[in-house]
Image 1: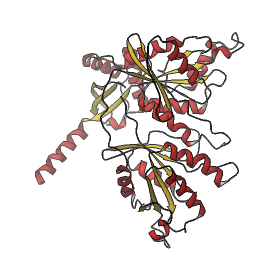
Image 2 (image 1 turned 30 degrees about the vertical axis):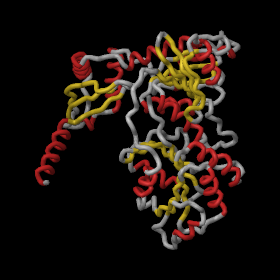
Image 3 (image 1 turned 180 degrees about the vertical axis):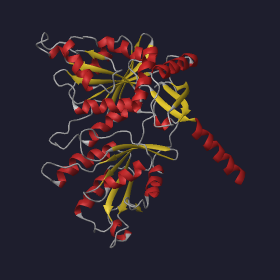
Image 4 (image 1 turned 90 degrees about the vertical axis):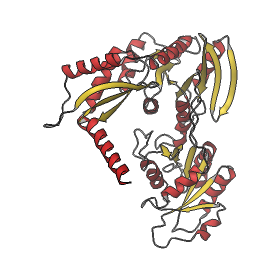
Length: 453
């Protein structure tokens, strides 16, 4: 069972350096998981690995109320941040005296009863004020920092680590976890109830075990399946400057916990930017996926608006996940509802299917013979052998030399051929490349260091 990662939210008024702190903490770990698609703003959600801790870091910068009313922004975004987070970072500007805005942010954070850390930012600037000025906010844990110059960054990470559990290896079980994800009002809850209600053997009904994720356990073909419903994900309302930051957080948590995700889209509103964004996150997370068009019963002119015409459009929009199967459903008529469970079992089986190293290497050599990898003068990549190192998702490691010159299109070519050999419909597959010269150089360096010690 996947364990839910803690969430750390950065809050504070405008221009105190929230985005700079976010970028410093995430980029220093080189572990960005999710990016804003189609906006000009900074990344807003990143996964941070620090020592034995791992957590989601969420930035609330850039959230603007249409009327620039600070109180309204506080109610809509800061409250949501404190509800969703396990730890809260309140950021203030060290060169500015405490304002009513700062007091309001601190009050909301402390009221949540969550661990709160005050980050006094921009301490590198002249005129920065002493801690006594900021103690009046009532937050005991104060850290002086400069996100711009990487001062105090690790103090912040240490303080976060003190307030969240260390990452523990999840206890494996045979439960297949399937998450229903997508925009609001696409029929997640209806499908969730339909899938649960049609089964004769509901094992348990655990509502709200994880914040904003409803779940139900069912049996299907003697397999234990847990359905996760992310109905709590809400629209950005009147905010028109991109998608609301926290609307995607619950979806991230469900995706992380799931083995397979059903990305739901309303038949009347297909191929939105947010749908693409969620599909990209599922792909990056290495989870199984099927694209589910809901409310097919609501399409009136089925002769002009048939699946044969809709499917190519969806395939074009989601060409970055061509392996995801497409299915049309209706919770009203029951069309293809049970088939979804069949698809989930099939995808899970493909993710666990065994491969033979001999077959993999024969395939690799055939690919190289048919289409040798291009490179620079006298520095052509050489691919020597391939092994599978993991499942869920299937993960393959290719050894060779000059692999840094291997073009991304060649990796696509290898994946395409691998999928033709083994049926991986419904799951991403991952590649790693190991340069033998670099491996040898690293070993020699380690030997030299051990000799010197």
